Image (tube, rainbow, N blue to C red):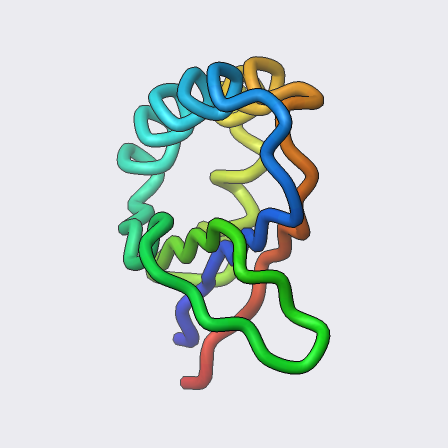
Length: 97
């Protein structure tokens, strides 16, 4: 079964405090759902029209598990804390089997 991945590319961070609150809650929401953070921040080199800002990559055992984690009540709480603190491109993608 193909794995599922959360891919978040931040365009801008306008409120670092909201991002910090989100990070705490998101970690608590993701781990029980089987998520494993592979990339969180760190160095970025962007090409083409990419933006060299924060990138986060979280792996799940399946695409369905990744979607369920995003829809969980615990993650919705994390999103409420984040609110308008960032502008990001968030997507869930299916890995190669």
